[in-house]
Image (cartoon, rainbow, N blue to C red; front, side, top):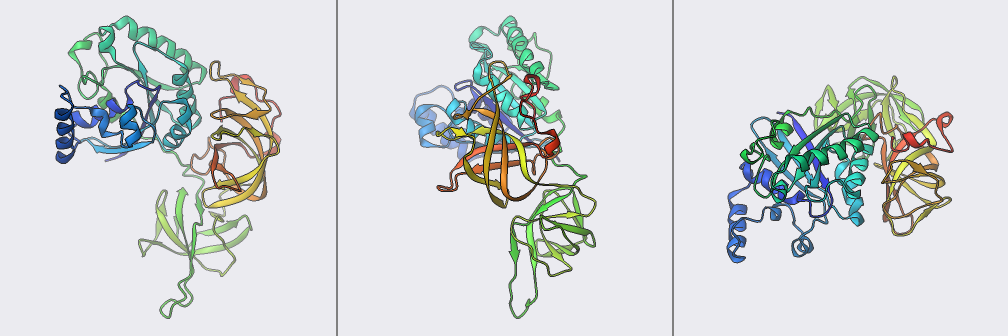
Length: 431
């Protein structure tokens, strides 16, 4: 049984938490003790229906305000598939949370309130999901019950969103009319929306192919921890622990260590303290190498046939997450999984206009801005362009004084020949 990871996003009060609650509730994925708690809450408030949003809104502040602030994760299974759901916040000031939630998703459900239509947050979240490599989109037109299940309202919103999809070159967009509050077209098809002949939301989710988000032809393994017990039983043991980020590793493979460039051979691979002949992404493993060479946390082990970029300068798309604006020349840290290196932003090339998706010149990035920048690092970094490998093409920027996360970054170009001082408007939103 395969796994589909999806995120729900959209503007505040579009009904994201209620939709997830309805999916869990109507698919019988809520435990008996949680059902009892929901029923007690319903009785205490004299409500006629269970508040399904409580299944995902876990923070006290969220429940008091009726909004989603944190990123909530829920898990459920149907006879056809396993699911991991991420409920992302809708407020613009929590864009950083949405980026975190979308980074591992295969599909994005973009909710739109039938009374409001496509608004700025709809466009912003669609853009971010597209930048983060999500291939499958569902336009969920919610709260149709509040507009009398009017087909004309649904068709008008679909037409508006199709214009957004065409601008961003989204290849797979499915529009579904629904009411999360009443369960129309969420798990089961609704008689209230007889004019709609397509699948329910859950039926569609069960049929979407899961995305392979790591490049199997370019194996990557980054060392997270060097294991040297130096005990009487294991006096000479040296293992390199980490997660295979992409591809397959086999005992006997000839490998190169980057950024040093030293070569050696994989003597053994251990999974759960047991030797295995081979391991694949995203398994956590320990590699044991034939030669006693200098390897540190953050170094990358790749087969000789692999071709990673080893760079000290690259271009990237950033979602800026700090109240203090970013300006060229700022020094900070690039954290690329286990590797942390000093760096500086040498240029801010363009900012993306959320309304038009076109690029425009700027000399700074403010909170929630999406910009293309050039970054120079103090030490070589082993990285891939995000469109080639979602795992190794992502990084974060960290304040070197406070340790605060400043931005989420997606590597756009690693070859200096392709660096550009000006990003064409029609490609500004691509990685």
